[in-house]
Amino acid sequence: MAAIVCAILDPNPAKDCGADCAKFQKSELEYKFNKRALERPYTSKHSWGKTYGEHKRHLEFSHDQYRELQKYAEEVGIFFTASGMDEMAVDFLHELNVPFFKVGSGDTNNFPYLEKTAKKGRPMVVSSGMQSMETMRRVYKTVKEHNQNFAILQCTSAYPLEPEDVNLRVITLRTLEVNVQLKQSSIIFCIFFLYSPSQDCGADCAKFQKSELEYKFNKRALERPYTSKHSWGKTYGEHKHHLEFSHDQYRELQKYAEEVGIFFTASGMDEMAVDFLHELNVPFFKVGSGDTNNFPYLEKTAKKGRPMVVSSGMQSMETMRRVYKTVKEHNQNFAILQCTSAYPLEPEDVNLRVITEYQKEFPDIPIGYSGHESGISISVAAVALGAKVIERHVTLDKTWKGSDHAASLVPSELSELVRSIRLVERALGSSIKQMLPCEKPCHDKLGKSVVAKVNIPKGTTLTLDMLTVKVAEPMGIVAQDLSKLVGKKVLEDVEEDEGLMPEVVDSYGKKAKC
Image 1: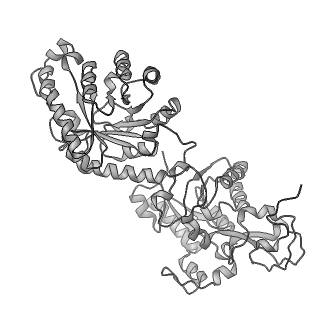
Image 2 (image 1 turned 135 degrees about the vertical axis):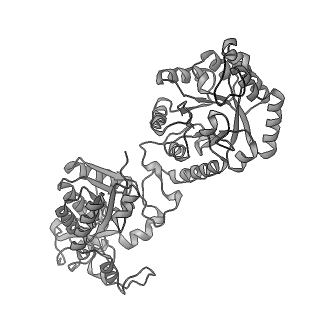
Image 3 (image 1 turned 45 degrees about the horizontal axis):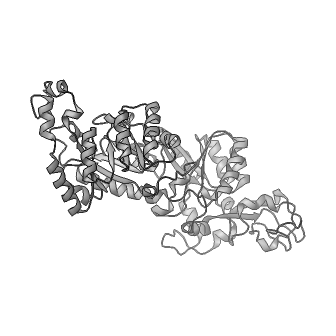
């Protein structure tokens, strides 16, 4: 279960909203900033003082106030911690016995700080804004050497953050490359009874179900009494005949779909239905979960050469491996959907992690999700996990007769689902971890660099105890290069608390001659 941590001013709302932890930011300002950074004028509309130091002091809670906040957090029943924005702040939080340390993005490349914090033995949560993957590998190695209990957060340090700069794909270990037709965005299709709403809501395809009843059911199945509250006839056959569209009605539906500008297809629920849909020249065949283990049907359908989308409700992984092999032998263009055949579907039975297992088992085809749950959140999460096809049932009224209606979306929910999916697709972005242009304002304002801890005369050979890392004005050598400076000479006098500039350090940034 994911822990939910809120950066907030009052623990009580966080608790009331269901968060697990209220997190603050603690700075000992003279240890976080050099003197010039605190003295610089600060004329932003957000300013609480004439200088940046006055502004920050106005916002900073005292030690006693932190103790009061911690006590209040205990009273309302929520965990309390803070980002220690410098080594002294971390020492204070350690005294408070916080449950974990949060490392803000500005300190992620501050390796002396990371090492000292890791050695304290508390769990750590490390943000990665403004960092490269190379830096994050070094962060992992540094923390892991001293502390086994830590997490790394994907983060982009921009406020507010645009969806295309989120880059959720950095979270995953690898990016699946699948069929070009489905790689760029999720295809959203819905089982629907009328077309205009699905097209208006932004869906890509309206999908029906086509059965030739005598080929789908045996005689006794059609003749059995059907007394459900959802029944449209005395027998199951009468019920199904009432619901089934004729061939001419399907042709009318297909014509209407073309007029309103949406793709049209159906699940062929038996081999004769597939033959009819093939005659209609549908863009792809949908295989319902009830036919997924019907291998003669699968083989015949695959041989027709149309793209296929195969649901996997009620099946095992062993069966799905056989399905993949059977279809792949005759047809290269198909997708498999994770599906649980229950209406409505409870969240604990969804098993979205099967999507990632399918991605491992079948890496050369698109994987999707067919959902029967209430609401849209789970379907959106499926896209975040990499689903390339989303199927949902849609109705105009959830109270109508028929078990599907209660498990369906109304048009307003479908519209919100489409909007949310397209937003997540933008947020997935790139899997490359690097500092982004949108992070430059944050880096220029709060990025840390190497500062002299003591007066350093010209010609001095630098040692680690002469240097520290702060938010400095002007910004000097980047924090992650601190260790590279040890053993090099300074070419000019450097005063205590001054940023160490690249041109002051002999041979800094120059490659050694072979």
